[in-house]
Structures are given as structure tokens and as C-alpha cells.
Amino acid sequence: MNYSDFYQRSVDDPNGFWADEARRIHWQEPFSRVLDYSKPPFTRWFVGGKTNLCYNAVDRWTGSQGDKPALIAISTETGSEKTYTFAELHAEVNRAAAMMQSLAVGKGDRVLIYMPMIAEAVFAMLACARIGAIHSVVFGGFASNSLASRIEDATPKLVVSADAGSRGGKVVAYKPLLDEAIRMAQHKPDHVLLVDRGLAAMERVPGRDVDYAELREKHADAQVPVTWLESNESSYILYTSGTTGKPKGVQRDVGGYAVALAASMDYIFGGKAGETYFCTSDIGWVVGHSYIVYGPLIAGMATVLYEGLPIRPDAGIWWSIVEKYKVSRMFSAPTAVRVLKKQPPEFMKKHDLSSLKTLYLAGEPLDESTSEWISSALDVPVIDNYWQTETGWPILSIARGVDDRPARLGSPGVPMYGYKVKILNEGTGKTCGANEKGVVVIEGPLPPGCMQTVYGDDRRFLDTYWSNFADQQAYSTFDWGIRDADGYYFILGRTDDVINVAGHRLGTREIEESISSHPNVSEVAVVGIEDKLKGQVAVAFAVLKNAQAATTAEERRTLEGEIMAVVDRRLGALGRPARIYFVTLLPKTRSGKLLRRAIQAICEGRDPGDLPTIEDPSALHQIEGALKS
Ligand code: ATP
Ligand code: MG
Image 1 (cartoon, rainbow, N blue to C red):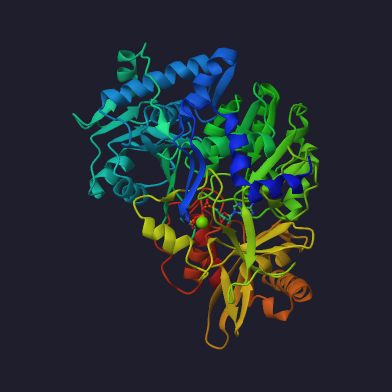
Image 2 (cartoon, helix red, strand yellow; image 1 turned 60 degrees about the horizontal axis):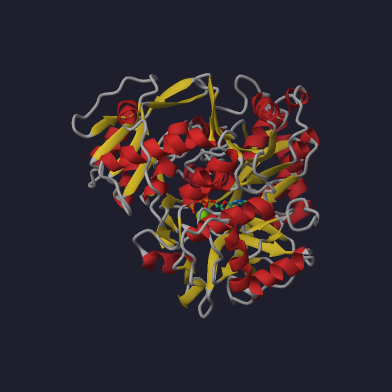
């Protein structure tokens, strides 16, 4: 089958296309309509059909592969490693479901999961799905403020948490952060279910706090029947990463999500039942929801849950996991690959990676040098994929399960089936021609799996995403992009990462690309800062491959001049930054996204504010230091 025809059918005949795809999952009761789009842009997929995410991810496989691995939980932080078969996973999920029911949690109740990357987090998610409770997983790296605002918004009846997480061998106590968050929030959960890993002492609140292990004992033999849900009931709420402001509570359905994931595991990720999938993301992000937990399990694959760093105990850890568990597909992020790139390549060569077929990367722009480096180091194809928390699965990628059209360096690929992707001119709203830059939008109806609405706030859903182009039913991604003459898309950065230099609008991403092309630059962040004369000017912070080349002030000036000359050649003098500073670290979120706004604030002498998602706060001090140099 040729991908162009396949894609065309998906958008010309969504009813026929998705009715076929829906056969991939179990329906307890069949749906009566594939798509109800009577209240655009709200979509209702598989109307009337009854199904359950937990059933499709777990129960469905206990017969044919009950004794095959389902969840492989590895922690290099605590030195533990445990494989759960589908039968064992089924038993644990039933226990967790019974525990939740004993705490009066039922269908439609929210359960907030604030957990490190341990098996119980997955049990809790699947248990919620089983009984129709709506989970909201909050990334374990968040502190009290972020947690409090999510407790406030999701109003959970129950919070599932643990004594602590661990990162790079350092214990991070969760319980005090959680207690503080609950204190800050107006809403109070009835109960807090706590996994005690024995990492940090916990003070328990009598009547509210419950011990996971103790309660589990009481429900050791529990069998909890699946609660069948209408396809459009809610499965979960997940807040966006908050790179550009207040996070939005993305609300997702049941049936559409299950079908979308099942199809993507075949067409995009090429996973087969019985194989092992290793996604290095965190369950706190959408990639973790879709491709650590639900996607691989729905496809009958074993999934690896990894707590730890990619370079500890050494940079070979991921590759030893690939070897040991014969991982066939791996999913990671460019930021992680850049970490590995700084390590000697010998760590990969030590391991037998012959099981690995493909590496998928997503979450941020994949630069050509990172892509080429990892692809040749692993000797497997690297497939970029572009999507958002809002969409739940890739918008742009290469569907190697359909045909073997080649990927193109620097491009995440072509629109995935079901997505009517367009590039619109920001001012006129007209569709851009080939290689003409505009805003990446998706014409409604959004395919199955995408967000239903902003939790509790339909208005915000409409105003935020659907109101940027008058008279057009277009979902805005808030990303700049272009489409080349062959239909490949390129993402040029976020629409709010635009700077205005003397009336000219420049994407910071474009300037970063050109700076990155200098052979000594490994990473760079560009921000626009206020300038009396020009409105704004670009300022760059670069991390060097060889920092030795810029130790003296004179060397730094020479290098700065060299890099500026590169930008002049590639972008023109308008794009040339006013200054290029050298640092060894850039401020990023824990999910690897550059915190350009924080850098900009520091440059303009403002307070960068509360940055709960920052990976390493010392990166901000480096920015301050560099400005003074
Ligand atoms: P918020 O919406 O709260 O500001 P966020 O946009 O960072 O947070 P996510 O949904 O996690 O939250 O990230 C999606 C965004 O990440 C995309 O809109 C895009 O900017 C970027 N992105 C994801 N994958 C890619 C990719 N393969 N190439 C380029 N950019 C990507
Ligand atoms: Mg976003």
C-alpha cells in the first residue's frame, strides 16, 4: 500500500477508515456511529461503543500471553529489576483497583498520581482505567506549587504517591512536597495512598494517609470486574508541559484513544505482540502515557519502565537494557541523545544491539547532527515524530508500517493519517505555498485520540486552540512550520518564540539552527531582548563541544565573530545576534524543552519567576554570570 493513498482515504473517508481501525481493540458493545461532529470542533468518536483501556492493555493478553513479560520495571537508582508477566500485571492491577474501591473511588472520580517511575504507578493508572476513575498523573519532578495548582484543578478524591523518588543517586522526598501542596490547595483529597520504598521517613496524617502495602495485603486475591465505559467518557486528564505559560488540562476519551494508539503501534511504531518496547520518557508526560503504558500494552508488547539517568552507572545502561530484554523499538528524546553524544561511543559498541530495529525521537526539534550521530552509532533508522500533549499520538512522522518512504533530515515527516495538517499565513489566514513559513494547524475534525476539551473549561478549549483564524475551523499548534515541495514538513519553533528586530519577525529557532551549524557549537538558545533602537535584538547562549577553545576573553571574542559570520551567511545580518555568550549548560525543563522565557527574563533584568520544571537551576546562574562577563 502506498502511503499517499492510505492517507488520502483517512481524510476523505474518516468513517470508513476509522471503523476499520476500531477492529484492533475489544469492544464490549459495538458503537453505533463512527464520528459525531455535530458540534464542531468537539468530536465524539465511536459513539455508543463500550470498551475499557485496562481490559485492552491487560486482560485481553492474559490468555494468549499470560506468562509473557508485560512490565519490566528497572531502577538503577535503587538497584531493583523486576518483570511482571501479563498475568502478574493483571493480579496487581486488580489489587490496586480493589484498594481504590475500598477508598470509595468509583467511576468518574479523579485520582491524582504523583509518583516516581515505579511499577505501582503503572498499576495505579491501569486500576483507574479499570474502574472508570479519571487519572491525572503529575510528573514526580514537580514541587508543591505545580502540584497544588493541579490538585486544585482536577479536585481528586484520592492521591497516590510514594515516600520518595531518586535521581542520580540523590533521594528526593515526595511526601513533604505533597503535604505542602495539599495544604496550599483549597481542595482536599479524602485519602492519600502511599507506597513506602524505604527511601525517606514519612509522617502520616491519621485518617487520610493509607499504606499501599498494608492495603494490598487485604486485597491480595481481589478480582475487580471491568467497568465498561462509553467511548467518549473520560480516561484521563494530563496537564501540558507549561513551557509557554499556565498548563492546560488536556482531557482524553477512552475508545478513540485506544484505537488511535493501537493503530499507531502498527503503522508508526511497528511493534509486534511479544516484542519489547523501551520508551525512556516519564509517565508524567504524554509520551509516557501513550508509549510507556497504554500503547505497547494494548499491542501486547512488554514495556520497560526505567527509573534512572541515561549515564548512570555509565553511558551503556540503556544499551545493556536493549541487549538483555531484546528491545525491538525504542523511543527517546533529542535532549537525552545529546547527553549521550557527550560520552565516548564505546559504551554502545560493548552491547549486542541486533534486536533493535528503530529509534523514535520526539518532544523537541531534532537537529541534523544529533540525528546523524545516533543513527550511525546505533546503525538503525531514526524516526522523528512531532506531536503534542493535546494530540496524544504523532501528528507528523513516517509511517513505516504502511510504506518505506524515506525520512528527510531535519523534518519530522509527513502528516499522519487522520490529521489534516495545513500551514496558514499568520496574518491573512491563507494556506501557504511550498516552503512558505506559517502556523501549523490541523483542520477539524481531529482524529481519534486527540483531546476532547480542556478539563472543565470548554470555553478555554475553543478560545485557546480554535480561535486564531477567523472563519476557519483550524486547531492551532502554536508552532511555526513549512512544507517542502514533496510534502515533508519542518517545524521552525513556537509561535511565541518570535522576536521582532526593527520590524522584522524572526523565529529564534531559525537563528539557533544557523548558530548550531558552526562545528564547535553543541547546543544553543536564542532569545529576543528589549532594545531601545530596534525594538528587540537576538542574544545567544551557546554550549561548546570544545570549551577549551574559548577560555580567554580574546578567544571568546574571536569565536563570537566566527559564529556571527556563519549566521550572516545563512540567515543574513538581520538574524545576527547582538551577543553570543558561552555557557556549559542551558536552562531546560525536565522534559528537555528550552526555557527561553526564563533566559529572556534574566537578560532583561527581570525575575524569571517560579520554575518548578527546571532541570538544573545552576543553568540560570550561568546565564547571569555570562551576562556579567
Ligand atoms: P505548553 O503547551 O504548556 O506550553 P508544551 O507545548 O511544551 O507546553 P508538550 O505538549 O509537551 O507541551 O509539547 C509539545 C510541543 O513540543 C510541540 O508543540 C512542539 O513545539 C514541540 N515538539 C514536540 N515534538 C517535536 C518534534 N519532533 N520536533 C519539533 N518540535 C517538537
Ligand atoms: Mg504546547
